[in-house]
Length: 231
Length: 116
Image (cartoon, each protein chain N blue to C red):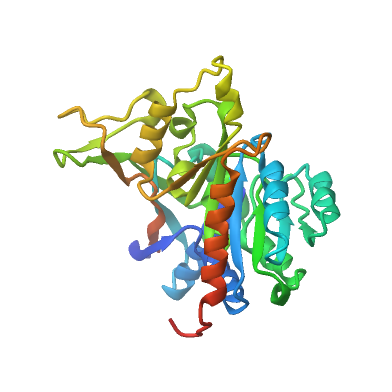
């Protein structure tokens, strides 16, 4: 009888996706394009934030959008109407985007003319957190009506994101929103010490300046980076 | 919900290593998965059974070792596990400090295979 033996693996389960993501990252770097992977629950304000960002930055930078939200044919049309090239991914009910889908979408964008690519990920706080797309930064939106307990319910996403946009700040004004900002920020800090937070309202425009300022800085850094093949 | 994609990717890695190691059959696969990963163990096994049907990993059992979510207290260096679904406040049980940092719980890898 054949004897049982062990084969040591010690390899990430999603290593194929990570390899693809690294290819995307390299392609973006060669083209000096900054890509942000935007994740949130349905209704948190992904499309609103994208539209606001486009209108603030489109004069200064070339922007492209990759639409991955399941129900977002409308979103792609909105973006295209703003004069920005948009690629609609047919995710066919998928709960997340992966690096292969992004690689196909990037081929459809004229990267040489772009400085910023915004990926609108599928609307949920679970699956998108697992998949590296090759983005420069991950950003997530949490809107006030979703509640301050979300970091405890969806800790992975809060722990992996580089940027947290707290949207619908205008809901706090009326005094009837049951959202404990202090407790919320403490939970975020425990899960993620390096995250940058922006408090905004896409409705009133409050706080959006600091978000777009941050993006400008990142894009500028990326444009100035000397393309190197070995690093 | 994303278990199918995860299992396909895992199977690819397993088969690659099994072939390299000249295995005739994979008997079990030991996975280390942090509690922060939202995966349902039962789904993983049944997707695996389905996807691995005609491969040398067919019939292999998945041994999923779940690693706890652990925080480190900045004030007293205490390491402590937390069940995030059951708390409202993440604080050190030793000194009560709230300056705590996540140190593990996001693991997601294939540790080793048992083959013949």
